[in-house]
Length: 495
Image 1 (cartoon, helix red, strand yellow):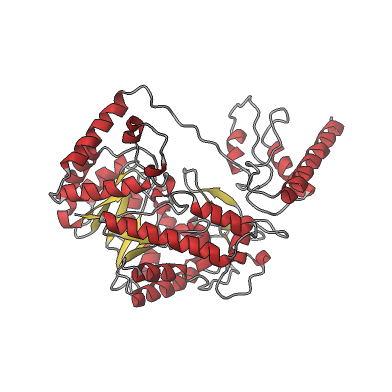
Image 2 (cartoon, one colour; image 1 turned 90 degrees about the horizontal axis):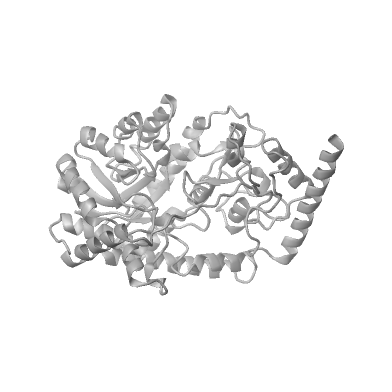
């Protein structure tokens, strides 16, 4: 029984990447220093999974910012305002898109599905000149191979990339983003050809938008894309991954009929209905990567429950085609429980961070292969029982931000939801070093006032200011206060 990990946290067990990025952005270290920290983290992650016995280890899931922005870089889809002149995209252009710079704002940032992670939204239109502008995927595959680890390169799938994009400024809002499919597929083919030449045998496309309620023409785009990629992928085993929710029946039918695809990854934690579709209509001869270990929480897996699910699938797909996997990337959980030195033993027994979830995946795979670790399973069962009966378990709260989502998070208030408390949606993006003008903040507040009553709107930055320099914070706050005062005067005179 084989094992697979969809993706892994990139920040590091002690937030090494976070500190390296902040040092680089602050000018205290150079590009080589940042690249060294990143390479060390990747090496550690691949070695950890290899040592744990994972067969299908992902690469190209590391990112300096987010995986969608990495795809934008790969495709050379840089908005004109960043003055990129072609060639391999470097840190200056990459981080300008992510964070803005002194002269231009960042690209829009929005939530990655219903998680607490965000991604940089691609800005596309009919005039975008796509080109192969970031060789990151191939470079990292070769990097892992040089360390003795054969990986599965992972990409945001071409159709999901377009469906997650938006029309660029000046492009009609009705522009069909999927019309760009024929322009980006040649670049995917170039990357695939380089990976094959480097020795890759598996490749993974994350098509997470398949869990959405898609229209017929959108589903047809998946068939078109993978038909076009089939010859380029010849000789490779292709995985198409979905996660975060059930795959609707029509999407499941489209997905499992895609040409040239060897296997499918499903979230079987949040996709309970998908389990029924698998049992009734999974195609014969294909691999099922069964996502039974939750990648979105910090709790230890119920190993006995997962074994029961996996055993029920063995008869459907065959023991040789069933692969134990995570429900999604482990990006969405903490990195390693070993660093939590202040937790007592009872609470620790309930938890599993990314490093522990890798071990859980391997333990489940071995159990189904007849190599069950009885002591490990017994300890897990005791922890499950303890957590269920303990009064110490509490709920978590989630905080949301709005500044770079173009007020989309406030749209609910347009639909008649009554909200009496104050709300501070965030009037400028503190993640960027760029100082917003008073006029820009004034316009953003005005947009918010089209949705919110004046008596509940608080004017504030979108997050804490600790990552910014005083030279950036002070003028930004001065402009924010000036914008608020100007609006108060305008509102008073309008009465």
